[in-house]
Amino acid sequence: MSSSQKDLFRLARQAGIYTSIPLLLGGGPLLGFIAGRALDSRIGTEPWGVAVGVLIGLVAGGVEAVRLIQYAQREFGSD
Image (cartoon, rainbow, N blue to C red; front, side, top):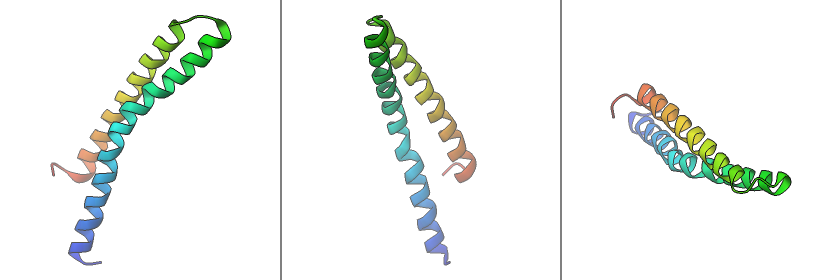
């Protein structure tokens, strides 16, 4: 594999990692909303299930985004 192919592969990996961060930050709260809404409809706790679900999703997405950023910094240096 030539140097330019390695650079292209590295760039593609970086793009994949950094592109997933917004998906984590949006997907976590969305899944929390859906789960909270389902919980609210089953046990009648509106709006608490949605609120707690969105908060848990936001925290989980944020934590995973920080982990991904730390991984990218270790893997790719300070590029």
